[in-house]
Image (cartoon, rainbow, N blue to C red; front, side, top):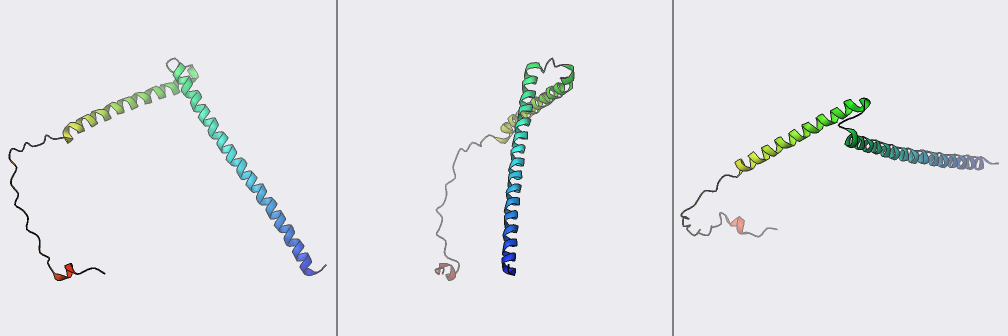
Amino acid sequence: MSFFDTFKEKATDLAQSGVAKSKELAEIGKLKLDNAAEEDAIKKAYIEIGKLYYAERGMTPEPAYAALCEKITASKAVIESNDARADEIRAAGATAAAPEAPVVTEVPAEEPAAPAAPESPAEDAPQE
């Protein structure tokens, strides 16, 4: 076998192993993306479980969940208080921002404006 035939064979083997390796890496990457999507689905399910539990048992939680339910209740109270304060600020700003319009009893007569003369001949020249 000649040198070029050996070189060609080795290059082909190397290319085939590179293609196989890239296929492996692509499949691993896809599996990792699939896993991330499934983990996101799990997190969303946990959140829904928590919302459902709080809605059903938040006022009389089991001892293991009492502290977390109290945190949620306290945070909801703060949010409600902040919303009420924001509404107060908006209401106060709306009345302060809209001053009464002045009453005009007589409109002053305007003199017709004289046409303005060009200041220099260069202003009248067409632009290129």
